[in-house]
Amino acid sequence: MVKFLLWCVLLIFCWPLALFAVVLYPLVWLFLLPFRLVGIAVHGVLELVAALIFLPVRLLRAI
Image 1 (cartoon, rainbow, N blue to C red):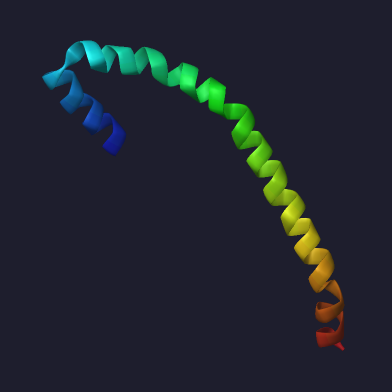
Image 2 (image 1 turned 120 degrees about the vertical axis):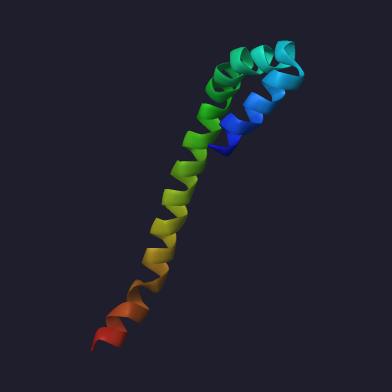
C-alpha cells in the first residue's frame, strides 16, 4: 500500500517518471527473480545443515 501511495505522489509531481517506473518495475522483477530463487535455495540448504548439526544434541536432550 505504501508503494502505491508513493507512486501516486510521484504521478502527481512527475508523471513521465511514474509511467517509466510502471513499465520498468516488471522488468526489474523478472531480472531479480533468479537471485531470489537462489536465495531461497541457499536458505533451505543452510537450514538443512543446521538441522543435521543440531540433530545429535536434540536426540541427547530427548533421552
